[in-house]
Image 1 (cartoon, rainbow, N blue to C red):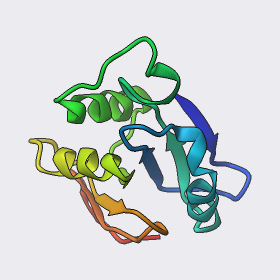
Image 2 (image 1 turned 45 degrees about the vertical axis):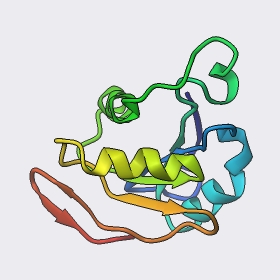
Image 3 (image 1 turned 180 degrees about the vertical axis):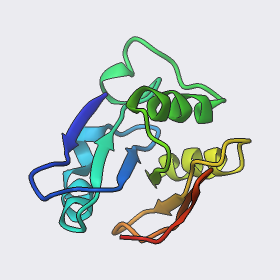
Length: 126
């Protein structure tokens, strides 16, 4: 996992960027930059079978657990998810998992705004 940015633009609400099946987090600097310009904190992750982990791990059918582990490790209570290509499937799958912390944005092009909710209430998009 590599943090692409967050504080240089006064970032606030967190967004996790999930790459597609045959891509890596390094391919999405433009997406991260667009989110940072919107004052969002960005965390891009290569999950099992992706990017730098592709040679040593395999794709998991329960990728929502991977996203949950990232969110838990970062200590987040509300988070936006942006999935690119097959990563869009991963974030959509996470949105229907039992957790209440997701707001998927499945895109092939530019990032989109989204709403996310936490146990404490609903936040508006940045």
